[in-house]
Image (cartoon, rainbow, N blue to C red; front, top):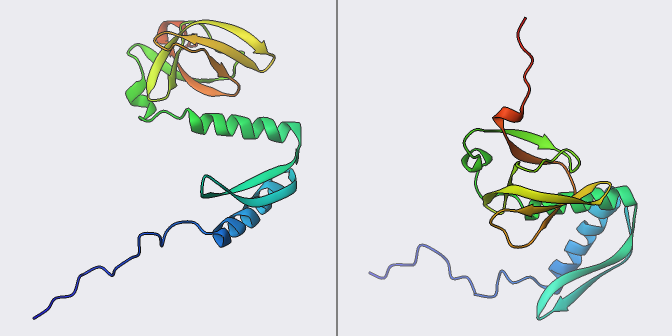
Length: 159
């Protein structure tokens, strides 16, 4: 007795994005960008190296651009492991802005935790950090969680 396959046959190119998919994505992207304060002048579905893409040209508020850049940066450098696994012994987690980070803090970045050995100001709201064990400097532009040695914390004494 012939048996049928438990799964239906799916053509290999069925899940490849089409021009129609790119157009629908462009519409959703425009709506999302307008909701964030971005004013697109042109949104065009295109193809790059055979892959459908959406090209956007427009203007946005400077504050919106800063928030977008900080959000993208945090997504790009999100640790691959939970923060607690990256925490060096004898340190405590602390969320800091670029002007509050200190030499000696440990920065979780790209699946590792790097000690800040030197830094300099890039502008009023960012710092260029030199990290031990990492060749290229890293620019901190928004709030991040760092691990600071516990002896640098000052806790109020109970009365």
